[in-house]
Picture 1 (tube, one colour):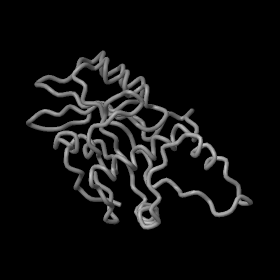
Picture 2 (cartoon, rainbow, N blue to C red):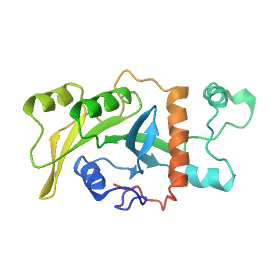
Picture 3 (cartoon, rainbow, N blue to C red):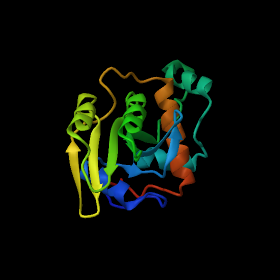
Length: 190
């Protein structure tokens, strides 16, 4: 799934930074995830999305229900719905590097992190080293050009495990994508 559109409410420099990092997914408008305000980037499974919308299966936000779904076995009958979205990562537009680092580190168990540094100068070498150490992407968005300064990891940290918390975030972002009037067209957005 590849395309270049995005829901309204996503600044062009955010879409440009996600594209420069080579992330494939839909960039959502700013939203709170675990008390941190970020631009989530999601991959949409168009078939599951269509099946869930057609069946009237809205996002499930009750954690106990999600825990039951995670423990589902075949002898319990028809399986619960699969996630309509998966998390690619999160984009921080914080003006302070320390704030972006804290935010993206806190969300590292769910997906990759990308900080957009703005302004006429690149961040200091020491600042870039901190992001490199934590495998968080840094993109410098300057009016003249957007450039990747640190190549981070793809996906969540390697110690992350699939569980209720991740499924809850996927369902929250499914709801956010529905609310932002985004519907898959068989193509993801970069």
